[in-house]
Image (cartoon, rainbow, N blue to C red; front, side, top):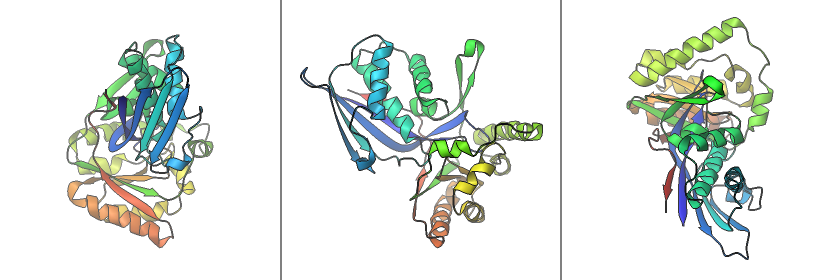
Length: 302
């Protein structure tokens, strides 16, 4: 059996829209075992919201598995795929990226590792459509992705200071990425572009140093959050509550609706309580997690 463990991710982190993401210490696991020739595939899903994940051929992890075999011009072997879920679905924590990465790495292992890590990254980005989730899911840590010469992806590791903790509040409602993208404008002013460029630069230095004043300023954004926050009931109240409890700032994790804060270690628990209690006052149940940045990315065990 081949097991692929893939971390959750958070994308954007405020001003890093569609280019910055970090791996988090919450995991989905994908177990691959080969079947006899009489079968084509079997899929079993366990864990968080397992009943909502397809066990048919349109399962995203299985589709990624097939994609790699098509890429190397080989027929896929009959496979049994067992999935253990701990990353919430459709909440902005990269659940789809775990499936894409899990399927690709499982296929690559079973095929004898014909593709190197850069080729896997390119395939994953092609399936997902943008790099901010799949890259840290594969590599771990915090990653900045950009295109270089000939449109090849250039991946930059972003240092993350040990003092910075991540707190996420996951509500009991969903927000699809498609819906979150529909509310974004087609163009932005020069002032907004300059604002985000400056704040992304400040965020990178804040993450590296842990400097509280830099982090508090850097999490502001004008590209996606002002438009998406209207889709998340209680956003402004949670923002105020998190800051009052000691958070450096609050951002939408990925496309949402999960909200994420960066804090010092001493503030993590008060911030987690403030966020869930504030949503509870609005009649919204939520679960908070205090997470670390995963340093290893996706792991394969035979």
